[in-house]
Image (cartoon, rainbow, N blue to C red; front, side, top):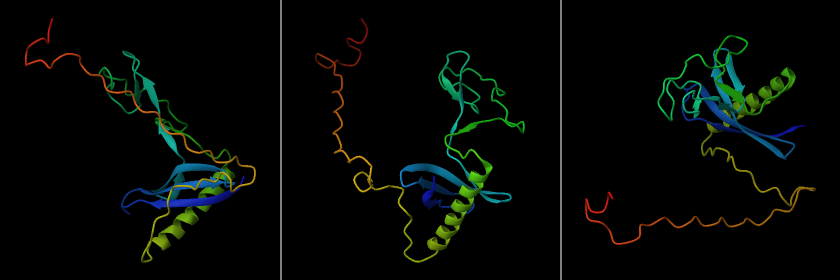
Length: 177
């Protein structure tokens, strides 16, 4: 699988650790969005797209992020040490959605992304700079074995809002049986 495109979206502030977002296209047919370029103590690195891990409340069963101290549904206090620990003994709060399996693949991908990031920083300094769009054209009919692009289907209308039958009540009348 070959990297065919890398798009970098710079963030506004240079003081933040989050320096840019990245979208990578593989073989002109598979896109991974929301990779992050983060400024670390040893230089910039690429963080893979991830999601916050959750667990159920012991009282009501509602999902809560692992950093939550109280349940979002019932308000009960949650155990602060309920997160699984990683190999370094730190709480594992996020899970990667997509990531390279081998060290070599990760290093190659990071090298390419950081190179594209440096190029984007140079372009951003030029007058009339326009950040790249994160939208991709419909690739349907233009690429060999890809299926013809279907015409978009209209979305169904939502049901009409519920209304109360009968005349409007004056304050205090007919509210309770």
